[in-house]
Length: 253
Length: 355
Ligand SMILES: Cc1ncc(C[n+]2csc(CCOP(=O)(O)OP(=O)(O)O)c2C)c(N)n1
Image (cartoon, rainbow over all chains, first blue to last red; front, side):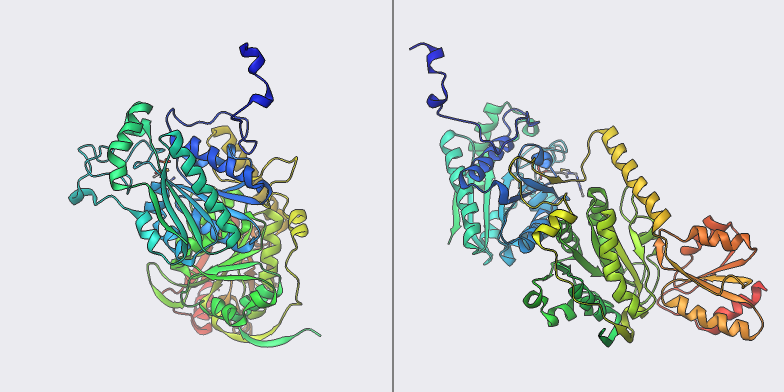
């Protein structure tokens, strides 16, 4: 069969979800954000909830998420997305409300807001991208930066005496009675991406049950911040991050 | 028949919010305004009107909850006192930039720092000059009675939605804590989904088929785009200055000396004016109700009649700067700080020095 004969809609095995807008993303090559945006968009499309989803963007590299997602979105101040989402959800109980946050946004400046939203068991979905660095501001240390990891503000490597320890915030959040689903996934292989999508879908489905906060961490790469090629960044993540941030469900009720 | 009650200023804010169809209150306890959330929790409006009342983990969270609620076109509010309002400045500048309506009640206490719980007007600059970073203003309403605390809840929401801007009710602790007779408003239902879509077409209510998704943001990286946003905000403030100035002129036109004072101080100064007139000194009181926009034009009209001015405040000389901007540098100032309230007699002493 000629190639041209094969290019027909009925032969299409992978499509582009209509919940992603037709515009190029600003993310660097190898970045996890674009992948996870697409997964959320696919879940929203599959569940048929585009008209009843409201997202909250963080401050960080994904600050312009509303330019890519074709759902209503609010841009929150740095770290405050869970508070913003709390009110949107409480005042609009018929909506699927999600936040999307980086490690600096959620685990550092917004630590109080995420803890209390999860502890209240707000009926929201939290998507947490842990790339162990502040991507947007040029690669400074994040609370999740590993010991020994070199960043712009730990040029000799993260040292506990100087900089404290990597924060396993997902483990803390799993302790909170307000959460119903806490999982850690990654996006380094097609198989991992499929699992992450299943986790995101489960989290959104939980909104229908209204039994607490659903929380999905995605361990991700920041090739630019880590100063590695996309391929090496993936490898570095597998070698170093999964030990501290093991993939799997922490809680599922 | 209108319902009349004897209530504290803070309590009436809660009652007025429920009656005006407020959708949500988010707050964190701090003296001297904790009665607002306490009254709401006792009243349980979620059973009556569906209004959400939530004790947040901090004022930072409260104002960002307000941001979220406002994003979806709801009539939402918070209240606090000075230290808590300082924490809210981040949210307020974001809301001003994203053009989100809300009502914030600041029952001021003595500062700076943790200060004291006594009454103060020390947050004038913070309220009137923006407060957070960037070029913006809030509409600032200054009630002088329990009745006005009631009335300004509805007025505040109306102005907030009319101009898509945060509105602050700036109250000194005296007005918040005192009990007075008040005529309560009629019950108004909360806006329906259809009304929200009509009154706030910009609000996040879920993407409609065929229409683009909506977003709320204060981030405009393109420099010329951000300048256009600023020009738009400034144009709004200009309209407010032309159309929303509110004040009370008590016997200023035949007076030789005009006292400019707001909130509870204006009421003390009415007494001063009476005492002064008994001694043959013609004194009037100009009470700004809107501190932003400021009654500049009215002050200039009085200045053109050759009157002398004194600004009396529970602060170290803040509003006096706006009076001077209006009428020139020759404005006397008298103020007390630290939560201390001046007596009519001590203010009268100052007036006599002006004769
Ligand atoms: C109040 C405040 N402080 C600091 C910043 C600067 N800032 C912007 S993004 C960011 C960190 C973002 O890192 P992260 O949340 O890990 O997201 P990433 O960019 O890596 O996706 C910081 C510190 C800000 N915008 N606001």
